[in-house]
Image (cartoon, rainbow, N blue to C red):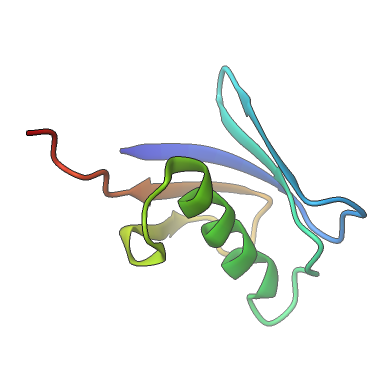
Length: 76
């Protein structure tokens, strides 16, 4: 599954909100040295209840708008 995410770095309060277009994520970390990207990937993993290894950044490494791929577990 691919999700569109809009990121707000250096937020005073970390949170995740779902909207019609995907997710909006506020993180404490600054957008320097990939810290905000790592925090966003962790937040997406927590939101969908998957391990961090199941989440990867597809596009937008240097943008506030990102596409993130989430490998959801197979349903049995």
